[in-house]
Image 1: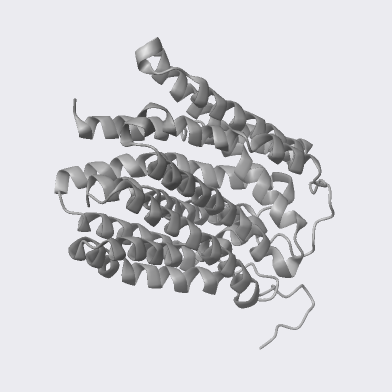
Image 2: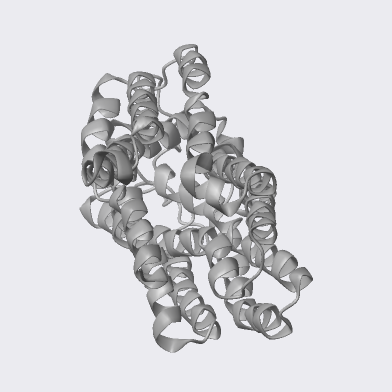
Length: 386
């Protein structure tokens, strides 16, 4: 009976999938560090497919009552567990399979592939919204989208089964940039803050379609077109960031785009909300997405290059999954609540600016790990360069 309560309930069901991410990160990350990246990635994909099929096949509330939302939340918990373990083994695999001079570009596919998936998802949503009515989308259209996603699982399993293992590959001399308890603690804390800032931005932008429809009152196709553009440009942006990070260094690539993002969020949001035009909405949001993505190629590379291979999958999975759990699952409900309480869309811009400033500080404190740019401490007996 309440549009706001209905929206919050659906967002919290989505957020339930984040609860089990740290558990998946610990269990599957440990499995990847002990038995290999490849078997862990195969297991996580199987679990993700199972969760998707559960959502596709579960009857609605009108048919089985309260069991429907219980099963839906259970499916999201399985997906969260799978994704929590996936990110550590997959990112470790990318770092370990790359040539030293191409690590940032290679690991940037961790973020780029997420945006490829989100782009395709938005495109599917756009296509369904053009073909089906709102009633049909609510009744069964969303099941079609999830079924398309589940159909990819067999292909993904085949691809992963052909990959060579990297766990037992000899470690490169410069692969680990930091050692010691204090060094690792610094990496983990700064990694948590940087990924936490990026997580809020990611799920903020994934809320854009809902924001366009519920707050700006634009049509569903326009909202989905904006989300498609946001995700599409993010793919090119983060890959460009990986290419640059291999040439300029991780730190410079992190700091400068993040600073530019901090300075432009409020002006662009004012343009979107005050002009009220479709052009402003479809163009403004992708511009912000373009500025918020390249730095994370440097973030992923810097964190992984600072961790030893024997614990890399689990450590990175936890550094990634904990902020995603705490902040990713709550970002969209919080944004919806903030809009409901303030009634002012510009409040979202100030919120995102504050979060981005926190991420910028962490990026400035992070050390350089690029093989081309990091400073190697002199060994005992060597002359210290002036």
